[in-house]
Structure formats: C-alpha cells, structure tokens
Image (cartoon, rainbow, N blue to C red):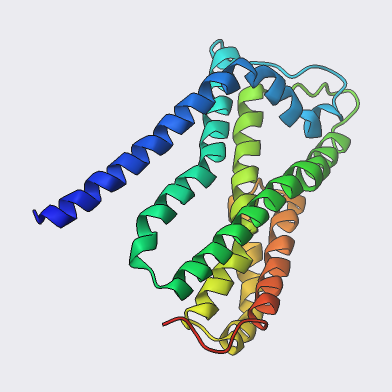
Length: 236
C-alpha cells in the first residue's frame, strides 16, 4: 500500500476513534439520568394518559435506559463526528468548496434541531392526542415503554432526515447536478412521493402520514426558495 494512503487511513482511524470515545464518555452520564430523560421524552404521551406506562418484558426497565443513553450519545456526538470528518477533508478542498460545506454544515445542524423540536412539540403530541382520544373510555391504555422508545426513535429519525431536504436541494443545485427548473417541474411528483413515504414509514394511520408528508412538501418548496438566492456560478 502507498505510504501516503496508509497515512491518510491512519489519520481517519484516529479521528473516528476520537469520535467513538466521545460517544462513550457521553453515554456514562446519560445512562445515570436516562430514567429522567425518558420521562421527559414520554411527556407527549403521558400528558394524555390516566395511568402509568408499563414494562412488558422483564429486561425492559434496564434495556430501555441503555438504549436511550446510547442513542442520545450518538446524537450528541454527531456534530463532533462531522467536525472530525470536516477537518480530515478540508486540506483537499478549494476555498470556495470549504465555504459551501461550512454553509451546509451550519444549515444542516439548525434544521436537525428544528426537526427534533417539531417532532417533540408538534408531531408527537398531535399523534398521541389523536390515538388516546380515539380510545374507548372503558379501555385502559397502558403503553409499553419498549414500544414507545422504538416508535418515538423512528419518528425522531424520520423528522431529522426530513428537515434536511433544503440542504440536499441546496447542494444538488449548487453543484449543478440539477437545475432549479428541473426540480420545480418535479414538484407534483414530490407530493406523491412524500405521501407514499409517509404511508410506508409511519404507523398505518392517516394523521401520521400527513404529519410526515406535509413538512416534506413544504421543506421541498423552502429548498427551492433558498436555491433561487444562490450565486449563478455553480461549484465545479
């Protein structure tokens, strides 16, 4: 193997190990506060319940906090991981390419936070409010903490990815892969794709599909709006 290539691989390994160590260090305090964090994350559902949540599996009371702490540690490590990758590739970039990636990174982090907040404060309360209000009063609703963890994790991931649509469009147009006109002409197809994805990726109810599909369509239009303000000269 070429010595230069080996040096690059060793540096990449070093940076990835630093990110992994960061995740492990974050996991330790998060695990000790995992139960309190879970209660906070469960508020979109517990505010509508008249009883406690339950643990069906014997291992759930310990496995759910471990899972929650691990997922939060990975999420909080993500900006540091991106920074390490950024530092790794920066020497090979032109100044204008570095500027573009900095813009994308900052915008992506803001949109990621917006996606998580939208999911927690708007999507999940609406969804659980709809489910609980549809339950017969004679039926006692006792949600399982493991299923709740799995369901909300999926929703947080979906909305975090959905809110990256403007950044993706920004990159595609800025790098001249697609033109604004091409993406505008595809808007009608995007609506169909958004509702299809909403049907496939969310629970089988109309409200979940709408809560995912509508933001996807709006963010697509926001991405096109952002693209119209770009410099005319593409990145080559």
